[in-house]
Length: 249
Image 1: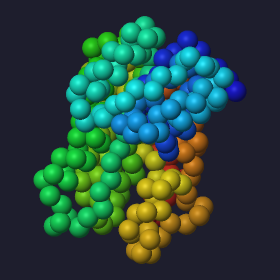
Image 2: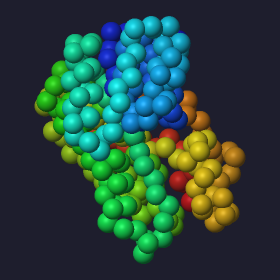
Image 3: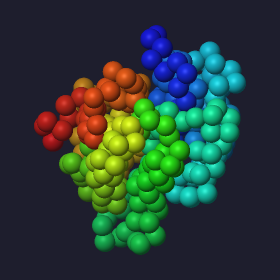
C-alpha cells in the first residue's frame, strides 16, 4: 500500500463504523495518524483496534467521543488532536443521520436533529479547521446522491446533504486563501445497514440493483484520493461515487 499520508494527521467523524471506519482504516494503512470521532462510545475501542491493525500503528490512533452537533464536542476533538499530535492535516466530515418519515409527519425536532448532524456538524468542524489547520490542509465532506436526486420519506436528509454541497463550495472559496482544499463526495447505494433498512428499499418502492451497490472501501478510496496530493488542483468539487446509479434514476 502506498504511503501517501505519512506524517499526516486525519480526523474522521462518524468513524466507529461504516464508511467512516473504512476511511479511517484506509488513512492508517497509508501511514496517517488517525482520530476516530464518534458519539457511540460503545464502538470506539473496537474501532481504534481495527484502525491500529490496518495501519500497524499502535499509539497513533485516538478515539474521541464526539457528537458533531455539539459545539463543545467538536472543539474538544479538534483541540485534543492538536494537544496529542500537534497538528491536523485532514478532516473528513462523515457523521450523518437519516430519518425516514413522510414530509407531513416531520417535526421541527426531526429537522433540527438531522440538520445539526449532517450540516451544522460539518460547519463546526470546518470552522475549527479554518481557525487552526495549516496551509496544505484538506477537508472532505461526505454528502449523498440524495443531494441531487432523492426518494420519498427523506426530506430532511436530502435537504441537509444538498446544503452540505453549498457549504463545500463556500468553504472552498474561503479556504483557498488559507491554503485549505475543500471537496465533497456523493456516495450512492452503499452496502450498509442504512441502505437495507431504508423503508423504500424494504418495500420495493426503490429498486436497488446489485450492480449499483458499492462498498465502504470503494468510498474510502475516493475520499483518500481527494485528501491526497494526487488531487492537489481539485477544489470545491462534488464527486459522485455511485457506480453510475444516478445516470438511470
